[in-house]
Image (tube, rainbow, N blue to C red; front, side, top):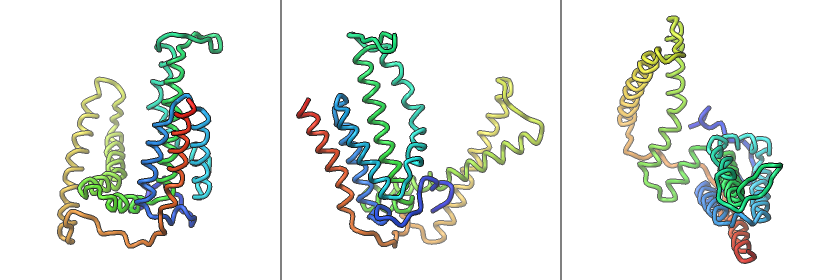
Length: 250
């Protein structure tokens, strides 16, 4: 499984790429939990966590530009944090001539920094681990095979459905239809219905083809050799230690 749906992966023969995927997945999840458990007032702790992520990225051959560019995915989910300083409770503070809630500022800061560190850690995982390896790692972590199979199909056929939608749009526009107004909603609804029917029919054909080839509900195991993975938990230990120290100092 490779192609456009694996656009985050950065091909590199580095030590991070060779680590076992199940260790990397588990370490990423634990690192995010450690970041979330860190008190939002401990700015120094988040600086240490960011340094850890950047270090792993550099060792893994992931450029800082690539890492920061992928942070744009979280922007829509963080927009509501902008309003917290304006609607938070007293006491208030003056910031650049604006009266803002102190609790709201801390709340917005906590959301932004924790979400950003979580996304950065996830991007590093996706950049150093191919999708097949991530799926095989989930299987080794005893994630239910049905969930792993559903995830694999969602990733694989996301691009397929996008291409199908593009062809439907081109066919509609070639017939002088350009639905941009509310009274043209029928064309959009027809396109959505056609896409659903075609997707369902394609899924049936793919399932029948897989059954004919001996599919029994699980994907073939990955035969790629990986190095040991306990070193993956070094960033987790650092993040957990920082979180504990932050709570102790505060």
